[in-house]
Image 1 (cartoon, rainbow, N blue to C red):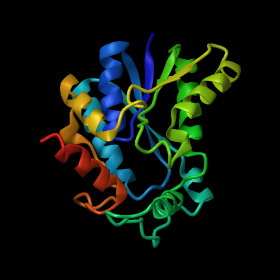
Image 2 (tube, one colour):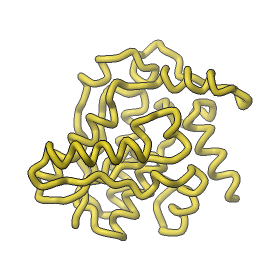
Image 3 (cartoon, rainbow, N blue to C red):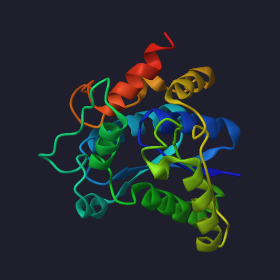
Image 4 (cartoon, helix red, strand yellow):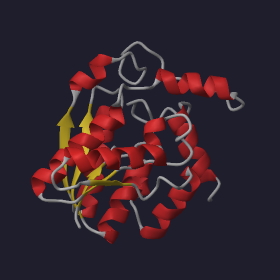
Length: 215
């Protein structure tokens, strides 16, 4: 039972990579470049993490995916949403739509499954989390179940999709990462690709809140 891990270089996927190494063995980590603003930072972080954890790393170019939509993550002049601390549910849903990349996780999982089947591996591991599942349906337990049904038909080897973090909140993921020795100091968690995390996008806010509550 060996795995391909989808590694963005962020919190959830880094914890999943370390857990996969501990639990069943990770043969390969894949990082996707779809033209996102943080691509360079994500790839750099992922490479460092894989080097530290001694896992083979590969970057997959999916530039066409970023060109399909109008996500603020890929459009150069589009501002990434920076929700206010007291933002209501409607504002949060709009912010999620603004960063939505068409079928992104669907593409990622299927690319990972193709690698897994070609390499004789059994599993694709992805970094999902409970907090974002209600805003991003492709980050949910229900999505994982549906994807596993599809993979039984689309792969002869019956590749499975797993996530060690899908049932956890961001706070719980940070705790798990610290408990198992994941290199959390190396992650890149910002939607943008500046010299430092912007500190204001939703991804930065989520990371800060998760880590501050555990100090």
